[in-house]
Length: 515
Ligand code: XMP
Image (cartoon, rainbow, N blue to C red):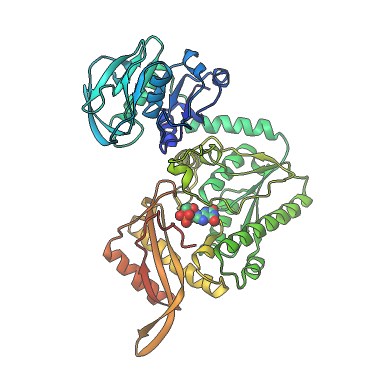
C-alpha cells in the first residue's frame, strides 16, 4: 500500500502530521527518528516527512536521522526542526536564535514550486522555533521568506528535498493542509487509496484469512474502540466471535442493559454477559486510595474475564484468538525527548487491560487507526451515534469518581446524578461536542435546608472538559442556565444530595478525573 512515513523527532504535533496525511487519503505511519535508511528503503514509502522537535541541532543529545536518508531518492519534507536538521546534515548553517519566533507570521512566496501550487503568493502560517537556517546547503534555493526567517521555505527540486520553517499541520496555518497535499499528491505522486471503505473491505479479508475456522474472544466494554472492533469482527466472522461483557458494578446507569440490547439482541452478536458486581464491590470494601482501587479493579477484571472465557470455551471448541480494540496511538512508540510534552504528561489509560502471558494469539483489527478513523469505521458498519460518538469512560468506572469508599449506595447516588448530566447535555445538544462531562461524588457532607428541615447530605461536583486526547484539557464554560438546570434536577431528583458544585480546573495542573 502507498504510504508516507513520518520520522518523529519528539514534536508534540507528530500525530497531527500523520492524521493530516490520512485526511489526504494516503496511509501514514510514524517511526522513530533514527530508523535506519535501509529499513526505510525496504518499506518503500512514497515520501518521508521529518517532524519538528524540541531540540536544537547543536544540543548534545539532539536526535539525528541516518545520513543515508538523503541518498534514498525518496521525496523528503522537513518541518521546523526537520528542516533545520536537513540543512545542518547537508552542509548548510543553522544558527541558535536569540529569541523564539512563536505565533502567526506572513510568508511571501518568491519562486514557483509544486509545494504551493495554485496558492496565493502571500500565506499566513504558524511559526514556533528558536534556531533558524542562515545558509543553505548546495543545491537548495529559497522559495519563501518571512519577516523573521529569510529561509522560511527551501527546496532542492533535483533531489526532491523540501523544508518548511513553519508548521503546516496545525490549524493556525489555514492552508497548511493544501501544502501537505501538494507534497503528497504533487511531489510524491500518491493516489487517494486510504479510505475507511477500503479499510473495512481489506480488514474483513485479512481477518477471515488469519482466523480461518477458529474462534475469537473479545472483551466488550461498550466504549468506542471495543464496540467498533466487535462490529468489524462480527461482519468478518459472524458466530465465530464471542464477546464477553463484564459488569463490574461501577458502570453508568443503564449501561449493562444497553450493551446487551444493542450487541446481543440488536446486532445478533454472540454475547456472554457476566454480572460480577458482587465480587468487585466486596473487594473494594473500605478501600479509599485511588491507585489501590485501580489495581483491585484491574486484577479482578482479568480474573473474571478469564473465568468467563473458560466457561464459554468449555461449551465449545477452544478460542484461539483474543481480539482487542487497540488503536494506533496505543502502538506508536513515544520518543522520550526532554521538552516533548507528550512524553512528560503521564496518562493512565487501559488499566483494566488483559494479562500479558496469555494463551491466546492477539488480534487487533484497529491497530492502524486513529480515533476519528475508528469512529468512521463504526458509522460505516451501522453502529448508532450513541456508541460511535460516546465520551471516553475510564476502565475503573465510577469507582474513581466516588471519592472515598465505594459502596452500593454511593454508586446509586452517583449513577443518578451522572445520568441527569448526560440527559441534560444531550437535550442542550452539547453532549457530543464535549470531550467528557460527568458527575463526581465528593467525600464531604454539607448542611442544607429542605422545606422546614435541616439536611446533612452529599455534595456532587459537575465536571465538563474540552480536550483533544485527554493529555491536556480546559473546563467548559457551560451556560449558567444549563448549570442551574443541572443543579436543580440533581438536588431535587437524587436522594441524598443537597449541594452541587462546578469544577473550574484545567489540566494541567488538575487532572480530568478527580482520582
Ligand atoms: P486524567 O484524569 O489522567 O484522565 O486527566 C485522562 C483521560 O484518561 C481517562 N482515565 C482513565 N482511563 N483507566 C482508563 O481506562 C483509568 O484508570 C483512567 N484514569 C483516567 C480519563 O477519563 C480521561 O479521559
